Length: 310
Ligand SMILES: [Zn+2]
Image (cartoon, rainbow, N blue to C red; front, side, top):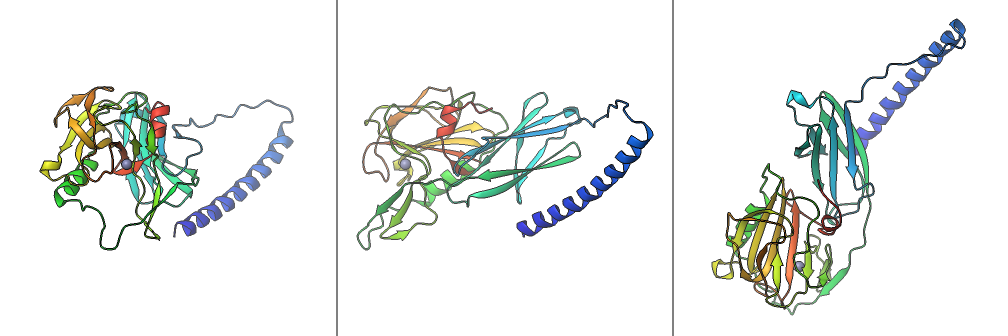
């Protein structure tokens, strides 16, 4: 369907280009004939809609940042950003500048994406190539009849609700900090086989830090504590959990904590203590799991630590 639409667009484009070329060619000959070497200044229309996508060469798991510059932002219209039939909110980040974030995950197919931006009565299609990435693979063998502990409805609902948060304010500023001093023991995106069968929907949705039990867990960026869940309340798999809403669809979740130092509704600064590393919930040893979500999808936190995200 998508392919067909693109093909017919190309056909339209090429035939209109051909016509334009012929017209220009005729006009040029006529023009040269009329006045030989007269310098001419052409009044070009002002480019009102400028769009840039970062990073320039994205890979699966990267967050795409779509930066939009408008000439006349005063008409109050917010640009519309979409990929296929999915829309992504754009937020004003400077007087004439907007930004939308698009998550990508290891579950997607690599290849071309068309990002459509519409604003001020104009629209622009940007082609982006999302390249593949080799994610490490783990083979997990479970004895028959033993599938580990099951999550409760309660924790699944609380976490799912937290992931849908879309707060218009932007609380974070600049690069994200590492939330724990331990080394990274499991990177983002690791895929799994269970008893020889590839788990199609599974990928490691975050980074694991092998911090010692009781070591400090800090907020990687400012935000509002929007989720606190404990084992005693029914967070059987997640363990003691803290969720921070960084705003504009960007949220962090911290699992398997020992202590929790914040409560729901608290505002935290980047670097503020939120809890300590533990092994609560479905965890085989003390570690911190940090998941970073953009519009409900788990993205690789790594680029958020190394670059400044507007
Ligand atoms: Zn993990």
